[in-house]
Amino acid sequence: MIGKVIGALVGREIDQRDGRGGFKGAMMGGMAATALRRMGPFGTILGGAYVAKKLLDRRRAGRMR
Picture (tube, rainbow, N blue to C red):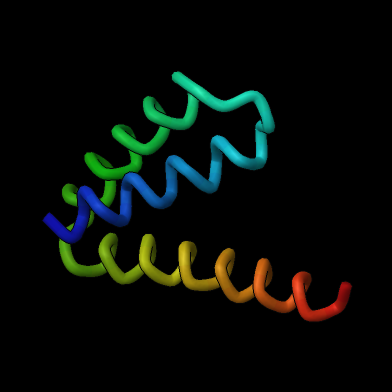
């Protein structure tokens, strides 16, 4: 379940980078969730670290403005 949540967050980050929204982010999130599940605990840690870094970068960018 945690892998699916992290996959959804990764998909959202990919979708926001594209800027158009929609299907691409959902598909990438689904593929990321599958890849993270197949990698086991290491994949969950890796996906969580990616999302945490993106959130940290976004927070720092907000403070700079």
